[in-house]
Amino acid sequence: MSMNISGNQDLVVYFLVDCSDSMQDELSRIERYINEIVPSLQAVNKSYPRMKMKARVLRFSSTSAFFSSQTALNIDNFSARDLISNGQCAVSKAYDQLVQQFKGADPKQGNATPPVMILISDGHFTDDYQQSLKALKALPMYRLGIRMAFTPGQNINRQALLDFTGLEENIRPLNKFEAMLSIWGRGR
Image (cartoon, rainbow, N blue to C red; front, side, top):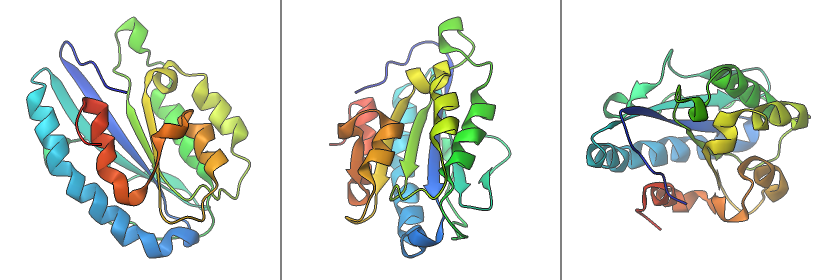
């Protein structure tokens, strides 16, 4: 799994963070892991001069799913912050947000670059997410994008995470977060 970058392109890394109550004890660690990986992402960005890497955090729980910034931020200005738990785990809200974000974008038409989508969750979703995921899977940005899931602990719903990633090998423990660098041929 690696990414081929050519031409002048914006590449957006989406961190989909489960901010439900079941993740409460993990959120500060997740925030730290995201922020610790940023310098490596900045180095990757510098090694691809035609690429402009940007990032966004999409926080979701039972009450809402929202981006932490109005637009994707240049990786040099990006940091994760304010990850606060709130309610149950309604991942469909995050999937719906991505559907809205990706509508009309088609890498095959040259009007977008496939994104990197990083789901950080235990996979214990409390909603019926299948319809929202089906709508997301219908979009070229999802199908051509890279999807990974990182999980805290052993008590996870692997099937729900596999539904998102599509590949067992793309589900990793949170303490192997640097594995996301393998997208660019770095890391483990």
